Length: 128
Length: 284
Image 1: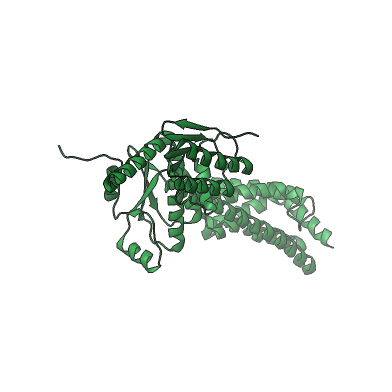
Image 2: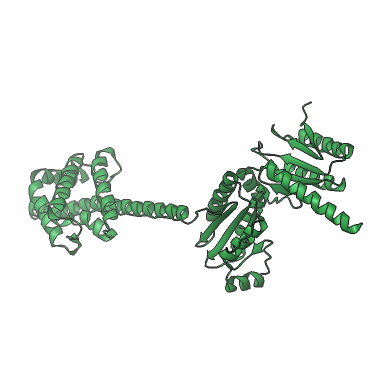
């Protein structure tokens, strides 16, 4: 069965979705990603969906779920590169992906993750 | 019986075409609806002559009841053309329809002269002519209206295009000045134009300026929020500017919460966006 690769880049995990998401593939990704986060002890996940022309409500919900699961495993998630048409469709469906960070492109997404981690380590610093 | 009447009219048209046309043109000039400011006499005479020629040919079919038939396609096409050009020139519908209706008088005159004292036949002829000319007159009005509707539709489209520009204000900052009432069609236009620009320029901020929006109701607010949500999904953020005191009052009174940064002027919004992008402005 085909799977979406999860690449490790330094302290972050990189997921680039380049095929059409069908439900089973999305569920497999969710499982792989949570395992990977726990295994690699990453603190940031970047999901690139710039190749996706169609995102249905199920996939959108799974994206939200993955972000929540990652947060429970102490990792920040950012979804990058959503197509304008996809954004319009999701809004029309009433899905706003509350709680998921978004960025225009992978570069900005990485910046966002680093800023989030910095802010977090600052907080820890204060706590200590 | 009816055939007799059609035949009489067709023959009269054939025989007295010149006389009818002269009479008709004279009458149109005399009428107040001639609109000499929009059309000169030569043009009007030409149109009249042309139309009567096709009318005469169509009349040879003896069919005066169904103007949808193929033998009437030529007069109809000509009338449609005349009606369209008049609609664009600024004639009123009544003035346009009078072109056809004024043909009654000369035709009646001829038929009366030909009838002798046979009033039965004359009444029949008058009725036949009335039926066909009324139908043609209504047809001109219909075409006139369609032309005007097309003009309105085109203007509406142009207006929508005109009123939704997306302007780059700064590196990473886009401005959408919203002018006029926000309905769902307009919002759709704005949203797709804005999102396309965001994707193209990689801008992190979009300023939605509602200075030109006359009023904000629940529906308008809903549309604004939709645009904001879509922008956020793309990974950019929105600032709403140009919130007038009246609009602030309305929004709060309606119990709406706009979960976005709002500023009262574009200047403030731009300053906020620049600050958030990490720039500082200093006077040298």
